[in-house]
Length: 244
Image (cartoon, rainbow, N blue to C red; front, side, top):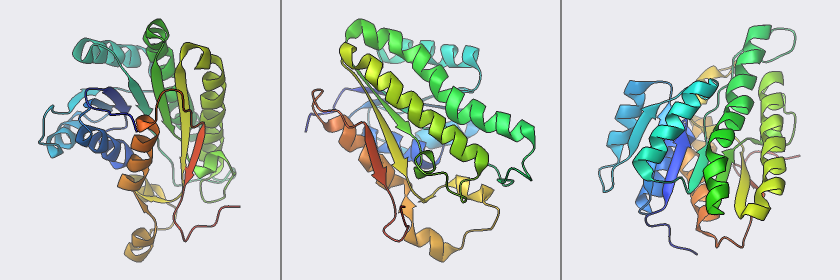
């Protein structure tokens, strides 16, 4: 495994859930970490969880807004010098998940955040990675990006399929520039996104499924491999969850 100490990591959706867990996991490895999200106070509180050195930096960003993304990346470049690892962790879901129930505006919202948001971040970060001929991008997708699961819903599945295709296509293009792109596909994870389930999730169910730290550990594993090794796709799911 390659040492990660001193590597720079930029993470979207870093205020909670998998994004926050990933930030903490990379910080524990000695990385310089910056997180972004839409809620400034949530980001501030998240950054204070890590008390080691270097501290976790934070800045507001709306990944669906291209100008906001460029401001975020420019800030990160100024703070970190370069971005070695990008983690596209921003994502959301809705309660009205069927085609019959879902308003078109919510379709637009999910595609803008889950799919276009990842594109916006890639568009802003890749030029410097190309110039340096080095970089790693980790997309936090979902098993709903491999199987159109009823549980995920129409818009969520479509957005995650789009993220999957985006990551694969960009990875195929950018390998000549020594840039690796990995899609991680978590199954059910106990994160705040569960609050948007149509049916409330019981504490017993939450205890059986993945924890955010499990997915973060997978991201650290991918980043720890030598640059000659590429993991295009990685599925991680609870033992109790079927995958078919």
